[in-house]
Length: 95
Image 1 (cartoon, rainbow, N blue to C red):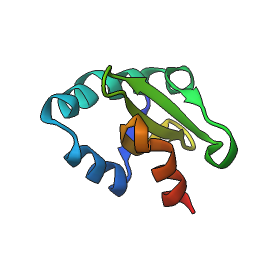
Image 2: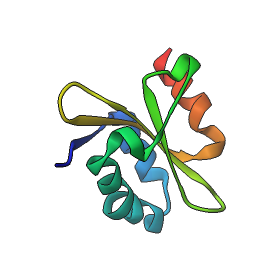
Image 3: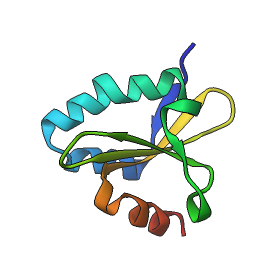
Image 4: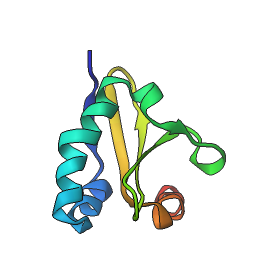
């Protein structure tokens, strides 16, 4: 059983900034993995970002998908992008 994936407006904008190959892999490879087992696909975050999970992929540059598991069977993706700006950007968006 897989969860429904919802992209926040900010995550949709993030995706448009990614190279086409990375965007394709997000949709066809990584989001389906998260949908199947969102509780274990990513690492739970702490501090200001508690309640979010971080899914890692890619190598040079490394990418992150930050998401929360909402009520029922919905996963809300709040950020997709490089590791360098992931956590600071999400902290800024949530404050």
